[in-house]
Length: 269
Length: 269
Image (cartoon, rainbow over the protein chains, first blue to last red):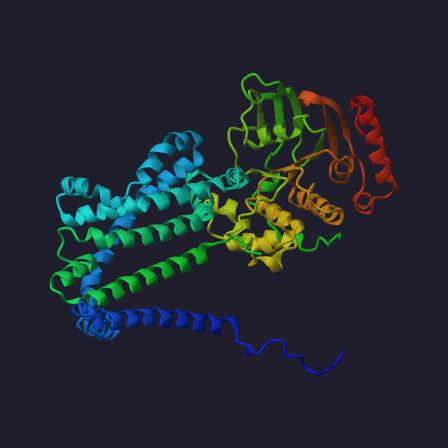
């Protein structure tokens, strides 16, 4: 019962939120440091000094110029459009098929092996077929993104349905719900978290597939910008584009995470 | 635990609904699960008058719950039929609603939204908010309308299920052991409240239970079902409301009388 305060830790009491921000800043600083060291090593290496514009200082100052000139937006917009459209197709196919295979054991068992087989094929393997099947390069790229994105959406939706409590459907039927009501007031809200988690995974895959897909044919987009910068030995622009790709990917993922948290009704405790 | 009935007068029935017939006529109902399964119900006949409160008592496997599902239209009988208010039951309806052992509230909706489900399915938007407030007041949950249902106790959840069941002003309420998962005090309060609400609203009530004391507490008539839904005893319960509330000597005598009768005719007490 001593009233002398006992110091158990040398650290100042930092609230969790502040600590989180500080740790995030620390991580970013570490990444910049590694990038900077890499740049120094390249610049001082006789065989590689031509690539010294990869370093943070030239890349970030170029990024600043590109942002001011609107070039960042001009090269990002076509990519976002392609990913968005591919994702819309993936959702339009993945959610209904996911619900069907989640509800019907027969369909799940029949489709299991074919779907797992198709899922394991790298989306980029479809490139020759996509190029032949679609009239425009844009359509081919949207197809490749949809092929990459459909599986996470479909499997996550199906997994969500298997956790649906059948009693909820009985309650709804008992209160006079039509099949459409059962879909909109029970099934979709119950699995909204799973659908959005699937979309989040799908966006991650789609964003990764996008850049190599844009190496083909098209003359716009982030993938094209990377290829173009390489061909013109414009290495500061190349590094700046990589930064843009990373930032947009991070922001999209963060938005998805917030959406998942918003619709999530499961209590953590 | 017994609350005053002063708020009940505020709850109007649909125009002329008090005179609507909600008598239940069960004729020759036969059912079996699977193609060659033994009959769960074989030719059950039972008449329940409008406004009557009837308990169906039986052991597990007597088919009492199956019979209730058939009355609700949630299960199609192999043979025979059920008429409610002269209307043949073909499918579930908001005019007769069942309460289950588990409240199965939708965790992505708050108390008021759960309560209004039947109104939503019936397309009744006008006056829905006022109606929800009325039924929540009737079950003593007015203060919790905006709560997340996952924060409620088991008894409160079952009260929300009760409010949800009566929101569409059904003439008939079917209870499938809805209190069996609750502690004794909560159960008693709900048993009294359900009886009071049924009387206030002029509801016909059919209660499935394996508990003789629950039947005596709630019902005007107790029907004993043996294997195959065979009716082996059909007795009126004549007790005053005061006897039911206080579990008086007369109440105890009634329980004993039924237990003795049931053990004689069915070896069940």
